[in-house]
Length: 304
View: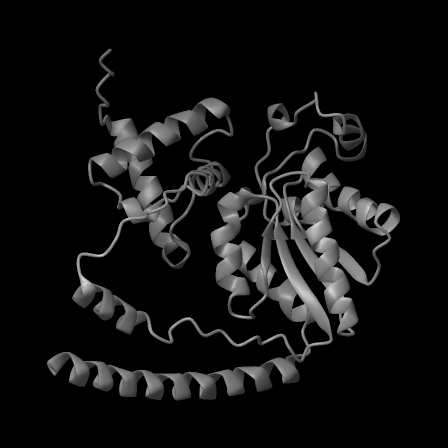
């Protein structure tokens, strides 16, 4: 069965131009997800917040990449994965690769002298790139919830909380999720299980985003049809917030990044953190010197 050939009409090219402007504006946050691009178009009034528009944008971005209008590196898919298990051509290629990567993986625990253990949690894997990029600067772990978690996952959390409690640290979990019945219920449900069913203490959940204030402040688009009224939590949500359901993806990437950074730094004892950064920089200098000496040794050995 042959597929219909995609045609670049003036309307499609105009939409493509708006997409490329968004990609340019958020250059430092690329790759973006399809959903992030979609919400920026909606937020700027370029398209309506409808499932059909999302589908058409998906098709447009597909052909924009196939036809070379947009780089493949600009858009990412966090759902599908490919595990490359191929081997090496020969020992020379392997040695060269290993030498380039030698001593490059060091990451000092910049949080080791803090009086609390901090974790970042995001409801959606599609946004985890932004979270890991920010969290990496502080060596703070990132958890992806992807909805309500299994008891096995929560047992892992319990083990971490109890471990850090044994080192005299309380755990603080900073949560970012959708403003909808499920997104707002994930943390309370998990806290109930941990605190009252698994008897865990010495932890605190903080819901950072999305909030009603975020929706108002940033004029985030929402669609009443997006609210799943079949959700068992929908009735309470409707009574409390009305037909307002907004995805975390609707926040501009720069706004989301700043919210993550601000939430983290509110929990930090900055002098201790800065001291760790100074030590880390000295560690890197030491490792770089060792790497140079090793490179020289390998070159000498390969010549013999």
